Amino acid sequence: MPMRGSLKTWRVELIAEVEAARTFARKYHEGQTDKLKIPYIYHLEDVVRCVSNLGSLIVCIAWLHDCVEDTSATLDEIEEQFGRAVRDGVDAMTKREGEDYFRDYLARLKRNPHAVPVKIADAYHNLGKTHRLERSDPKKAVCLEKKYKHVLAALGVPAFKPERLEFKDGGWRSVRSY
Image (cartoon, rainbow, N blue to C red; front, side, top):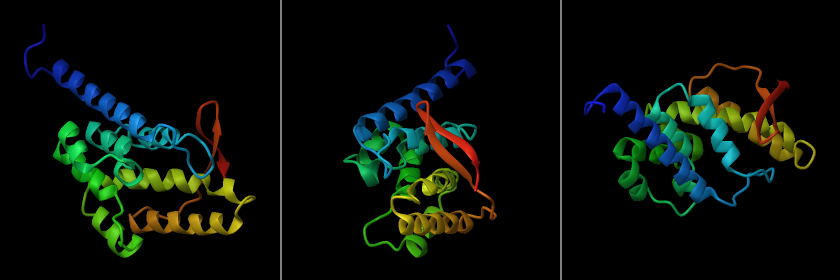
């Protein structure tokens, strides 16, 4: 039996918290799809994959980052189940009604150091999918590509040639660069 506060106990608690965030996100995003009609949970999984080496706090924020904005989940529920730090990260990731995306929302988000890597992963994932809209809605594809490149630049990510993502075998896969 491990001692209270032991490394083993701590690791088990962190794993349980991340699994609880995953379960919470799956429950609230059930039945949702993205603009490409792909189950929304796959977007969350890819964002989590991108930040998986940054610790359980950031991974929990990644699982929950769209819950308040896109579902009936509340910040109070998130704080009750996951604590104040996760709540604050999800709050930073949640665009509020009436906020200008770049002037207000991103400026507020940048003040939360735990939300920034999640937003970078979110924007990177979304940028990687914009090419999939080129046939059905070329104007939207160009608009979204410009938006996500602007987001990444605003968050300090240098210009780069993004990967194209395709949904294959139950997950997002990089197929090649633009």
